Length: 163
Image 1 (cartoon, rainbow, N blue to C red):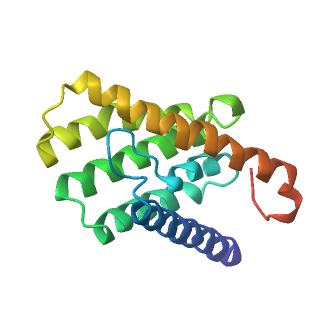
Image 2 (tube, rainbow, N blue to C red):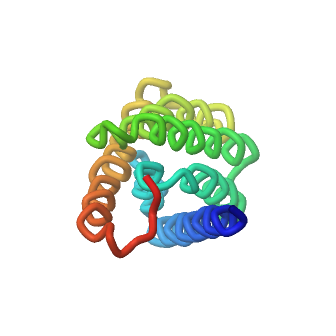
């Protein structure tokens, strides 16, 4: 039993660390800025399909990366909550694997525009921001995330995930 807890915590920590590295990398290359933001780390939002440890891992990774990259307090709280909500819902629908990217896409499409408006004073209309955030999330979670999912499915016997 103790070994399972250690394994769970280790998986969550590794996922958080990878999330942070990918977020910082996205920021360095300017992918996470502009009208359509692509965070490479959002591709990891399919991981709750493979392990429950991905839920706290993604949340902590988002929280810490938002702090490390200098986000405002509303972004640290709201953005991390969007990731947590998306991860929890992804875990719940894991049996419908082609829908895996939908919860994080929707959570971010609803919450991130509010963060941009109230946290950063972005003046565009909420619907415009929903559209642009949605495009970025579809590319990050939908396209890249499902690529991660397919790769892990193909080589899943190498990775010690519980399902």
